[in-house]
Image 1: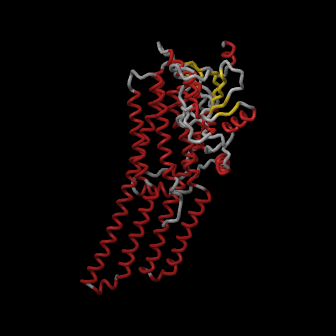
Image 2: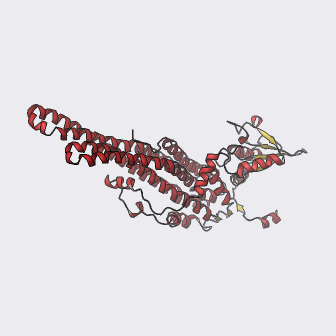
Length: 486
């Protein structure tokens, strides 16, 4: 044992569990599963005879999607591979029904390929290649969305809407408080965070760029659709410019058709969703690594066919590359407190702020659209009344009345199109739900009598909550591709 410890590149000493021997064994098994790609279990195959045994660790690995090489104690055999990835809709707790393979050179090669290799799907491979070939995008040429926020008084526009800081600088500023509170072995445990930070910074930078580009493309499309109608109606008011206004209408239509084509061809929508998902999968890894015995949600490979998305594969690679933490936690309570203060509470504040901003945006777009529709109705009513009272005056201004009653609903429809396509109300609701759930987790963590295993469960639950919200957000926005206004 001493010889192995001297050769080890990392050595993690888990917090001492006073008078809880079984808990200590459970924690060791949990830490092993958290940091392995394949678990080799020397096991008699018998059910667990208490917490912390080999059977419990094997069950935990299978639930996390980690393959288990089971070597039967006391038998002369090569063993077998247990893995939920060998089947579909497999219950990891039903060992009798679990699909298995013999331990052979070819099976081991296939297993390693499924774990380490990129997704087999050609589309996923192409998307991964696109991501790896991305360039830094400091200049943002599409600012329609931040301009809309500024015009509606939702958020002030800054120079960062047009030009961003270097991606590494902005992430260092964001991660700085976490490093100060948790980094550099401050609580006795050291984690290689530089790689995680760089991976997060790059994905976050690209996600921000394509989010603004996609949202601005949507805003422009609906604005151009409204403008096309206004140009057509303006010819009724200023007939001397009818030719130029008639020319402007097809140009506006051509512009939003071109904008839609470029957005679809460049895959603004997909790149935004996938890059944001990647960044948010990487973010909580820094805290989970520090705890030693915690793991990110859905860490295992789900299929032997390599059907996982490239985002999941890349995130797993970052978790693996960070390695095993080293050291011994000096104050468990202080470490959990720092993670709550610098990981979970900033997310609560972000979601509450985002919910407030999205609610204001949705409300003001709704109010503006309704105002235009009401004005249009009043214009029609005024036109009818004027026609009855002063028919000569009504005849002289008939074209203006037509333009007004038709133009305002067109602009109102464009505004409602932006509102519906953006789903700002749904985004606000999801953010509030996430913030409330995270707040409940923080409140539960404050209980002084919590066992260490329960605290780890809650931190993992916080990471799962953030990922769940992201999954719901992605599923909803998956249907909202950049399209021509209806």
